[in-house]
Amino acid sequence: MPSVKIGLSLGDPGGIGPEVTLKALFTFSNLPEADYVLFGPRSIIEKEINKFDLGVKIPDYDPKKASSLPQITLYDIPYPLNSLKSGYPCKENGEISFTCFKKAVKEAKKGSLDAVVTAPISKESWKLANINWAGHTEYLCQDYPEAIMSFFSNNLNVALFTHHMALKEALKKIKKKDLGDFFLRLDRFAQKATKKRFHLLVPGLNPHAGENGLMGKEEITEIRPAINAAKESGVQVSGPFPPDTVFKKAYKDNSKIVASLFHDQGLIAFKIVSFNEGVNVTLGLPFIRTSPDHGTAFDIVGKGTADPTSMFEAIKLAVQFSLNYRINNSL
Image 1 (cartoon, rainbow, N blue to C red):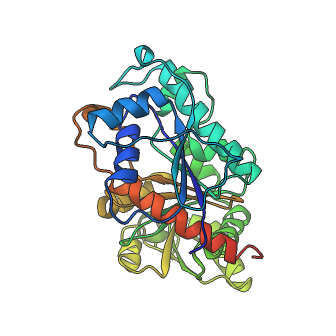
Image 2 (cartoon, one colour):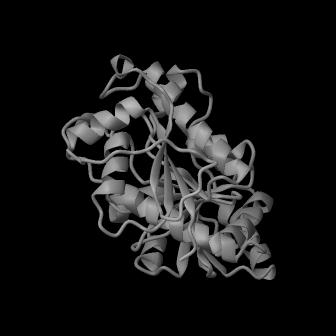
C-alpha cells in the first residue's frame, strides 16, 4: 500500500482529545500503515502517555528527514502544563487548540500532509480566545468555499447543505439554485473521496414533505426544481421525501447519502445510529480532513473512560480517502 502522511491536531487540551488520539494511535492493533504527525504540546502528550502507561516515546517531526518505515512523530507546539485547565472551556485552551489545527492545515496546504484528522475542539473556548469561526469546517471554508460537511459510518451517510448557523438563517438559504449546486458538488466530491457514486436522498423541509403544498410550498418552489436540475446533469438524486422516513431508506445502505437541508435534520438521526463510530468528513478540499463525531466531553475528562473508536475510524477513513484522492486526482 502506498504510504500516506496523516496529521492529527490534538483538539482542546482540556477535553478528551489527547486521550482519544493517543488511544487510537497506540491501543489498536490494526492501525493503518501510514506516517502520522501529531500537532500538539509535548508536555500534554507525555502527561497522557504516562497516565495511560502506554510506554512509548514519540520523536520530533522533521519534514526533511525521510523514513523507510511508517512512524509516529510530534510537531511540538509548546504549552506549559500549569496553564492547562481541564473540564471546561477557557481562552488559553482555545488558543492552543486553534494553533494546533491551523499549523496542521498549513502543512496540508503545502502538500506535506495527505490528510488532517482533528480531535474535538470547544467552540466556546475558540470564542473566548476571539477566534471567530464556528468550527473546523467554517475555518476551512474561508479558503475552500465549496467544501461540504458530511458524515460517514457503516449505518448511515449524511451530508449537510447548511451546518453551524441559526435555524432561521439556514431556512433562508434553501433556494433552488444554491441547492442544485450543492447536489452537484456533493456528487463530485463524494465520488472523488470514495471511488464510487452515491444515490442522494433529499428530505423535504416541511412535515410530510409539504403534502403537495398543504404544509408549506418550499418543496414545490425550491427543493424539487433543484433535484430535477441535478438529475438533468447526471446526478443520481431523489426526493423530496418526508423528513421522518428518509433516513430509513438510507439506513445500512452505503450506496446512499441523505442530503440534509440543515444541521439537526441530518445529525439527530446520524448520531442515534452512529455516535461511537461515525466520522465527520470535510469534502471538497485538496486534502482529506476527518474528525470523530463527538465533542470534547468535558464531563468525563480525567476518568480514562473516553471511547477512542470514533477517532480510530476517523484515522482509518483519512488513510483510505487519501489513497482514493491519489487515484482520482483527475476528477
